[in-house]
View 1: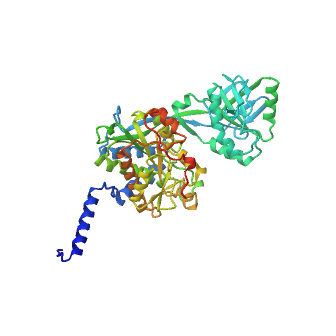
View 2: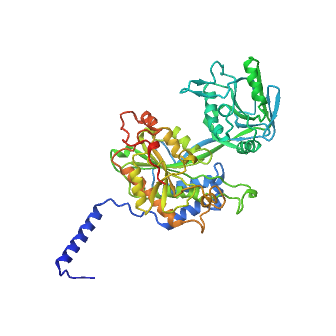
View 3: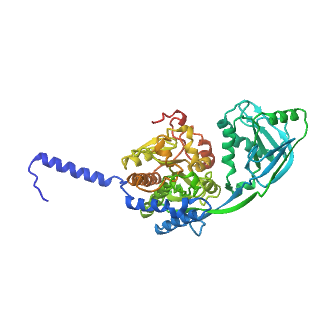
Length: 526
């Protein structure tokens, strides 16, 4: 089509149009990368019945790892430094709890599951002298030390559950790990916590949680000690222990579990490298991560549709974002290098990412950021949710990345769920690396989320929003490129709980934290 310019006004219109075109041409474009058909292809394979829910240690998990590795090969990702394949083996120990056993505590003989349950075991039997350390609490701020005057090394440590006379099960469980670690640090031979809560329902929940086979990192298991919960609803045991301790009488404990065993599992993190194009910044890495495991197959007695927990939203969705971000950044590399990490065993307690930060393929101090893609589900397709919103200096880039897809980046408004600490970004944060998780839009654990979260209904089927998946994927692609191209190294915002670890990792003079309010003072967006 041709036309003639006949008036001054038309000259002006034409000039403005040409100028706008030139300006757009000069601007960095973060356009649509992934297309809906390729997003659909990846998620439908990863969440297919063929992979049987991708449970760590099962064939479907191994098949998913091979699929990811083949994609890396197709996209021409390099092997990580010092590696000869895309696989980083992660050695795990699976603990099989027996159905029968006894615990003799002073004069009481307690039966497995009815009155005690193991949390951690290193073998099936033990016996020895025990010491009673009240509630097992050490608080430097208040000056409280329940271990004062108690000889712990080589002894079995027994403490009461919770804090003082609190009966809150949730509060007590939150404190248990810290108490266990205090006993272990003092070289205790074993740790027993007495639950003097007269609540059969609560005890049955605890038994259900720990009666299933547990899986831990093999190396961590080597330094673990026995850890048991004992149910004492009438406080008879705790009263007797306190009396024996006051009178300095011997406390004897013995455990006997029949047919107890440990099995070794080897699963794989899958990792590859996209080498940055800047000759200086290429020595710095942005870690792009997502976990590819899920919870496998469960009894049909507990499933309405079927027995396979396909895990489309959690987390074939995040793995799809990882794969397509790798594809498009490998085709046009950013300034910094990208370490692409697909983790196993996230559903078992972030084990794959915990193993990685303990055995990094590039020094942790060379990693400037972790952008993690993980999901529990979605109930708002106009937003993305950022676990860790506003806690790092590149939040503005994540905001802009979302805008390119017509989305709004929002903070997690469910702080009681501790979602930041329940995904693989937490493993990187623990060593000081700035890290967040980009998740699909979730505003609450409502019915729309819960009908899919860890349910067999979580499939890539007609109820799944593939158009929204594509916008989510392209947000991750764009955010990763922006962060890898950023002029300044990312940082935790001043006052963040991980700021001290940041300085330990990178050095006090590596950079100064952004002068903004600490996360506790940031106004939470609803």
